[in-house]
Length: 259
Image 1 (tube, helix red, strand yellow):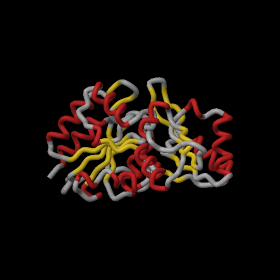
Image 2 (cartoon, rainbow, N blue to C red; image 1 turned 180 degrees about the vertical axis):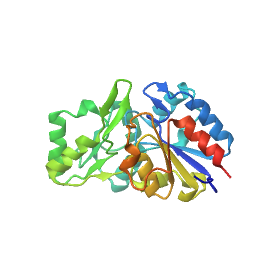
Image 3 (cartoon, rainbow, N blue to C red; image 1 turned 45 degrees about the vertical axis):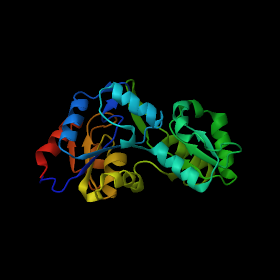
Image 4 (cartoon, rainbow, N blue to C red; image 1 turned 90 degrees about the vertical axis):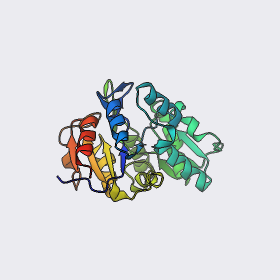
């Protein structure tokens, strides 16, 4: 494996890569500080829909991660931009703590369905309401389609299975705005001043983090924390640039191979 010639930016997944619930991955806050000392641009790209960007930033700061809210790019923000651009009135299947990022949108008489991670909304009556809206022509917008995510209690279902259920029932395809869409990764780059080939992504999801970033022209490092399961690196083609045990090891590799 050669040098990382011309590397200028590092994109980092959050949940499962930097932390799981309210516990930081061992050594991750210190590794982030070392990465910043290398004068690399750092951005955080996340599909997390359980809380607003502000709340997420504050939680990470409590876990001793040094970051600013403007460095975080969330699929919630991407979904809001899409809904606002199209002038839609969404039925928001998102957690109460994430509603802050949709403040100001008209949600009366909804004509669109937006699905994030919100277990309290995944009951029959709410899902049936969403289904009927879609049958009447409302677009289905998936903030992301992650199959599962890691919690302190083990793997838990993500929004993907519920989005797929609506797609199947209504015979439609959802518009997906978060990872692994290449456009989502590219949104994080303009503020860094670099091109995709000058960026590398670190994440715990082979398909959504690594595969998505590599499809956008970046390199991808898969870490064996969070939702990672043995053999995940073999489920995407091309495979990851590197697979390593944790975020601190990924940072070690980057710092050792910079030119």
